[in-house]
Image 1 (cartoon, helix red, strand yellow):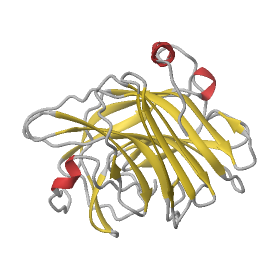
Image 2 (cartoon, helix red, strand yellow):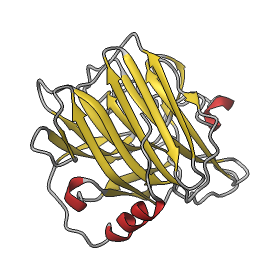
Image 3 (cartoon, one colour):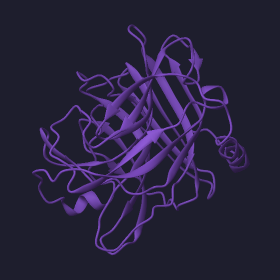
Image 4 (spheres, one colour):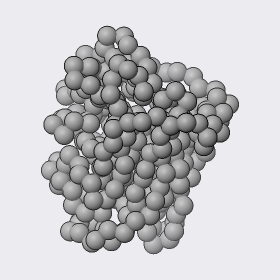
Length: 282
């Protein structure tokens, strides 16, 4: 489902993020997610929306790193076997070049690259809508006025949560053996206009009384749903701010950290873009 986003509106939202009061939330640690998830026993979600400005990565030659920004339904529960999501990615190549792309993914299937050119600084708007087993993913670049919408049928569906996330992507050699890739220095990612709607028609921001919420901090030593193979000798962390503008906006900030070298395998070439990401849980 496409929805239009005036660039001026997100720009005004971003300007306010530095000074607005924050809201309290439960907290969690993850090795690959940072941002917010909403969930409550018995609540099922139909739609999630948000807008963000595509980050500008700080890249250095000789080091590959990766980051993704997305909205999605499902995948938060450790027992989840599905996740429906759409977003953008900003990576750093081994030559120090920043690579910007867009993608969608219906876990457990691998992600699919979207033919939509995204530049750092572009204003993006995204939504995921699930009705039965029909999933509609939408991404609009309000800067270039280009958009993508696709409806698919998914065999496995999870609508028990909604998320607004910055992620350290993964590369996999099998469904049970995945490696968290080094997190790119994206500086600060700002989400705005965040909302969700349940299957009963209740809508709200992240702070809605219709559901609970969890703030998720990305730390290389945190747990994740799939097998964690280690992130190399150095990686990154990411921390969400408090909720702003009535629970519709927040920032995620990058921090450089060092972690112990772990067993790892060489990433495939497809991991340099959005060609195969894994986002199965916290």
